[in-house]
Image (tube, rainbow, N blue to C red):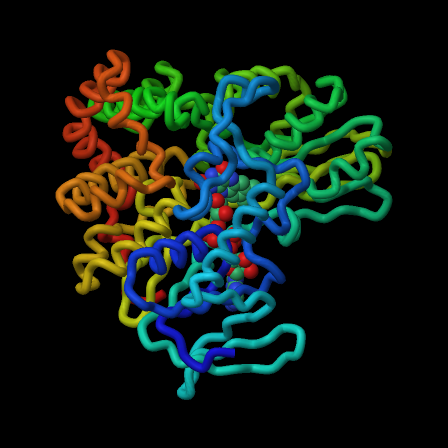
Length: 472
Ligand SMILES: Cc1cc2nc3c(=O)[nH]c(=O)nc-3n(C[C@H](O)[C@H](O)[C@H](O)COP(=O)(O)OP(=O)(O)OC[C@H]3O[C@@H](n4cnc5c(N)ncnc54)[C@H](O)[C@@H]3O)c2cc1C
């Protein structure tokens, strides 16, 4: 094992690999060591449920130096007409290839199956999980925390409710394995994983009447048509124009939501119910229509206990059938960790900057680390922008992105890097700027973005500097 390294990256998920890939491509002669407790690169994708896919197109996901997929348009299914979305296996293969590519440079290496334990007076401690042996690394430049936003996923979380012996209950990862033996299903959870489980059941021929959805909360989703890159980049620009117009015109979060829903930017499964949850995930219109076919929706709060004949919830109880399979989709998913400075003394804490763009942001932070010297300046260019939990976070999340993007455009080298970055969802904009629909949407965005930023900052429940802390 190396005894010293320039950068020690903790976590070989999307963030750690996208950062290392970008840093090694930009910085001269740096040595990078990446450690991960998991046996292979890819982070949570190694433990994802079998039918998982990216919810966004593959085109701008992964590491910058390697394409993911072929930028094909899906011809069938609920994503038809939109850019392909990688399966879990395709994502894992991509990160495996990315780690190999880093290794081939001779300047980076991955230590899988190793746990970072933190520093002591002799160096940064790394434990080899198989042998238990602890090694110390001398880090010449920085430790890079690429696990700060590690989420809670179905495979590793423990449900917050009890399950009595005899009740049929599975984590969503096991759904395909039990599907043949179930008379009906009770999908538990309000977010994207629960939606994925329902869509998987419907796509596999389950009658909607055999699906009960225990959905304590209603969630907002983006419409996927506004996240299509390349030849369809006009859809992204249209989405930004709608954000800016809605933001500039809204005096409250409620009126903002009314506008965002009215123009089709945000959608909810049941428009007659108030929704507060917002995790920044997206659905296509056919997916939304399919989910609306499920009529048996239980809204009695959170599940407290599942017994063979009944489900106990915060606000009541319902009968359930013994042969019903209860599917746990209640893991939190995206981390709710608060904002802290990305660049600290001897430490980089990878976080979101442009909202909901984990790979782009990690690569951006790698570039900024390589090309700027002063931590204050680096933090100015990379303000942390926590994952949203509720719609109350939408104004802060969007305004932080716009403020950061404004700063990037005033830095020629950074603007040039972003323009050429595969992970930049707007990369194809210059090629289509002359199309009439793209041009007019972009103009609407430019006309409104300044007023919208001011307005959204005033609507945001916490402004960015107040969330800074000097401790990790
Ligand atoms: C089901 C699902 C689908 C998603 N789809 C999309 C999508 O389509 N598009 C998108 O942009 N985002 C998507 N996301 C968001 C997602 O969080 C990111 O895409 C990304 O994969 C997160 O990667 P990460 O590296 O930040 O975290 P992780 O993948 O969680 O990686 C963190 C790693 O750190 C390691 N680690 C933790 N502690 C230590 C330690 N002490 N020592 C060593 N290693 C340690 C862990 O083992 C882990 O491998 C999705 C998320 C989920 C859960």
